[in-house]
Image (cartoon, rainbow, N blue to C red; front, side):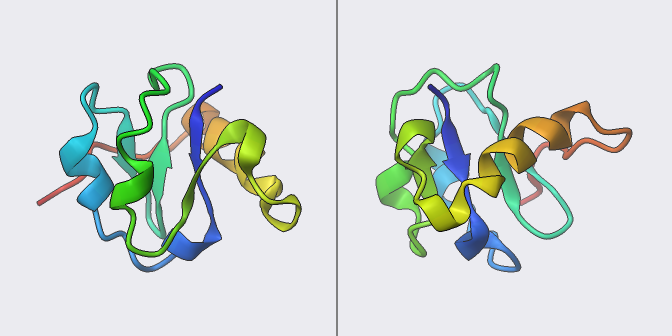
Amino acid sequence: MPYVITEACINVKDKSCVDVCPVDCIYEGGDQLYIHPDECIDCGACEPECPVTAIFPEEDVPGSLQAYIAKNRDVFKSDAPPARPTR
């Protein structure tokens, strides 16, 4: 199961998680960061680096944030998918 970035990242985009991701599967959207579900290797390196506790393993996403599982998947299928983060 991939990791998922949820609501707490909106308008924060700290990018600490990007620095530790060994496979560069974290992308930057207009309002938040996203983890590509097909590229994530489930290593968990990103989760403890998030200063706002926005990252969860898919199976542990809290009930009130379940919509972010689909949001993280669907954004990569859109006409304007997120891009590699800028520094």
